[in-house]
Structure formats: structure tokens, C-alpha cells
Image (tube, rainbow, N blue to C red):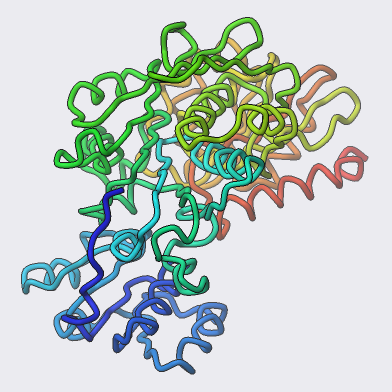
Length: 466
């Protein structure tokens, strides 16, 4: 595999970590392990943040909270920036001009990693696909670390696992990677890279859609050539266009092309790889609903086959795998009304996939922080599937403006009000679907907190009806 020598600790002794969330704290701990003088900075001052930093302070790290001090940036030998921190931050721009190296936690950990990496990115489906690949490898008896943007950062795994970075210590690292992580990972080049789909998202962070798409494909390095395999969605037009530019072996998964490396027809999934016997898998016990989950399954099965997982282990996993919370999670059916929690649907493409997997009529709950989104592409699906739309939160007025000409709509302030309105409007046979199409940060810490709130509301539904 492609890897980079870990020589930073010999040359650089002053480390600044910008953003002290999960990945930032992991970067601090890894810096301490490598002998750096670690300084962390975060604009936030929450008590919960302070508590998380106490163990790191006891190990010798120092922190500045509530502001970013320019001198901290200019005095650093290396800056590791967390994914949620905009790279346009003035202090970062000043450090860049001064010649300070700025990378992300993914890049830094990658430089020490000596085991094969399979990385999964895309606008939607990353977590399900990453977890599914990990489940395939575990069922097949392989040793795998599963993390990255999902759960445990790579640097945390390196810190906590003895000899984790040594060649042969495990069989594979399976990483979910976001565009924000890839933006600060200039040498990251996984053995297998998966791009599930590319639809508009995070346009508040990118100048245009092309820049966002370029970020997704940046993990395929021109110098890597056949040492990298690109697993791409053959039905996604952006993936098709980018496939022609990549200096890597390209394998497509597709629901429309029976000759693709992974395809589905008549309830069976077929894998066709060069120099390998064709493999087919029965999908009669596959539990995840929707076309998008078939795409996730094709991609994950293709990666598992490339990793050498036994076909019988793949079949057992297909039969037993269950979705994670907040991803088209069916909560309950009450008085003939089905309640589905898709709080992880934080962009327009995710809402489209969710609606495609639902039978009409749907009472749709959308809203949150828009991230520069344009909701007008949902108009045909709203006309076809949605009987009533409840728009809520910071983006509620924009959602209503974009979609109300095509579906009856009401705008409310928050999810409590949206849920009450949905219950009042729902009829037997309807699906009440929370698929916000927006980030949660206007009113929640994250999508999971929003999804748990929806669960509690469903649990109290009879009280709401009285």
C-alpha cells in the first residue's frame, strides 16, 4: 500500500490543534505520544468541552478557549485542523502565509499508518457502507479497524492500540472520510477508495458544486496508478465523469448496468472481478429498504470481495445486517401511521433517497440549518410522494418557499411543533418521515440528538393525540 514516513516528530516540536471535538482531542493525544509540545485552541467555552480536556492537560497539553490567538498559530511548527473548522479562518490564513504546515487529523494519522486502508466517501450512505464493510470483514475472520469520520478517529486508534501502525498488525483499516477531512489530507491515498454518490451539499463551505465534487475524488492520487482501486457508482453522473480522469483501476457498481463489477437483478447480487470466479448472493433476507441501500450493499460487497472475504461470510452478513439508528429507522406504526426517523438525512440528496424508498402518501418533516442548499430539486418527488410538508427550524422558510408551490406546506419553529402538526395531519396509511435535508446545528448538537428527540415524540404520541 501507499504510506508516508513518519518523520514529523523529528523536525517539528510545537503542535497546534485547532478545534477540540472528538478528532481534535485524538490529535492532541497522538501529538503527546509523539513527543510534541501540544497546544489546543477552540472558539467554544462550553463546560463539557473543558471537562474533556482535563485528562489531556494532566498529560501536559495546554489550551486556549473562547478565542483563537494569532500568536499561537504563527509560533506553531505544525497545525492540525479539525474537519468542522473553516479553512478560511483568518489565523489559519496568516499561518499559511507564514509557511506553517496545515493538515488534518486524517492526514497526520495516515502518515504513520502501515496497513492497507479502504476509505468510503460520498454525499450519502458513508456510515452504512463503512459499517457494512467492517461487518463483512469481521464475519470473514479478518482483523479490521472501522472508524474515521465514523466513531473513532484513526489517530485515536493509533494511540490506544499497541503496535497499531505496524505492518501486518491488522488486515485492513476501514475508514469513513468526509470532504472536509480530504481537504486537509494532501497525501492520503487509500488502497481502495469508494465514492458512493456526489450530490449538492456543504455549499456554504465550497465556492461551487465542482469544488465539492473535486474534494471527494482527491484521495485518488495521480502518482498511485494501479496501486489504487476506485469503487464508483456507475449510475451517478458525477462518478462517471470523474472516472475518466482517474489514474487508478476503476470498478463500477450499478443497478442499471448488468456488466458492472457489482450489479443486482432478480433478487440476487452479482460480483464480477477480473481473474476471479463470478459470485452471486441472495438478497431475500436483506433488511435495509430503498434503492440507496442496494447501492451501499453493492459497494460494500465489492470491497469485501477485493479484500478477500469468503463468499459464505458475505452471505451471512447480508442476511443478518441491520441499519444503524437515525438512518431510515422505522420507529413504530400507530393507528395505521408509520413513523420513520431519517435524522441522518442532512442534505437534499438524502431526502430524495428517503422519499424514493417510501410508498406514498408521506407527511414529510424538513428543516434545520441549510448549508447553502437548494431544495427545488425535490419538487418532482414532493409532487409524487408527499401529501403534506412541515418545514421547521432555521431553514423552514426557505424549505417552504422552494417547495410549497408543489405540496401543501406549513412552517413552524421547531421539531416539537412540526411533530404535532404531522400527527394532526396524518391519516391511516401515511408515513410520517423525518428527513430534514439540513444540518441539525440550529437547535441540536448533532443529528443523533435530533433523531432521539423524534423517537421520544413518537413514544409520547398517544399523549399528543389526547
